Length: 367
Image 1 (spheres, rainbow, N blue to C red):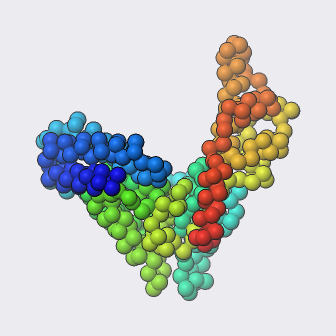
Image 2 (cartoon, rainbow, N blue to C red):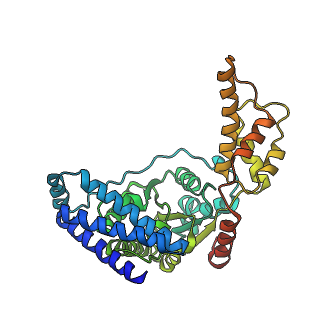
Image 3 (cartoon, rainbow, N blue to C red):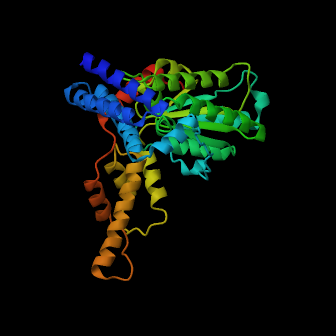
């Protein structure tokens, strides 16, 4: 296993170097060799973490191999002459309000204290305010929604940064893309608005790697360097880095330390599930037999995204029936429709994952 890893690393390094030099055919050959070895490592490894890392590397090399295969040599020369660093980052518009974020009161309060209050009354914060916030928890529980609502609350300029955006632009140039984004974000501060950089799926960009080419390490180091710049205790800037992850245990320790706030965004409790059900069904026609409190009890362990999909499935079942039976309008949604939707959709969150997240929270949480 260790020898195969070394060979894969060497083949990948050679591929990246040849790719940057514009040696298209040679780079294709090396990428193919690295992919073959990674496939072998996936089949041999007994570690789920290692297999996940191998699969991630394999996907990246496959994507780049496909690009090289369909690209003409002339186009590759143009990319090489441009240095591969012409990343384009455009701010995201959001109209999400705090009222759209159901539950998550602890997380909302922590974000208000870090972003909203300093923006309204900076004079009340002689020691500055938190500019690094890590949101961790199961998928579909509202981490992205929290960021969108916070940005909308203070009319912030919002950028997203993820591995797909940075790493796929051009292997080996990722650190330049990160530097470009932070440079633009700092320039935007002159517009008199807060700026938020949202690092989505942070573990895919900043996790501790068992197998990585130099570009990944340089990207991680560049991000840490940029974050050090905004965490300067003598600065009082409205530039924030908010990161989200479903797998905080994969994060680099140095990255974790950059966040003054580390907030667990967990599955909804029964009260929140009831609020979610009322919110999602507010514009639906429900039969008198629908008991939302009972549905809230039936959906223990479900994420907000799961609950939304259950409401959607129940609603669509009445529309399907309308078309199948040639009716003019769909009937009201019944309790049986919800029960059938729940029976067909299992929770996307496992008890094992929640337990692991809670254990990580006990060690690192800082809300």
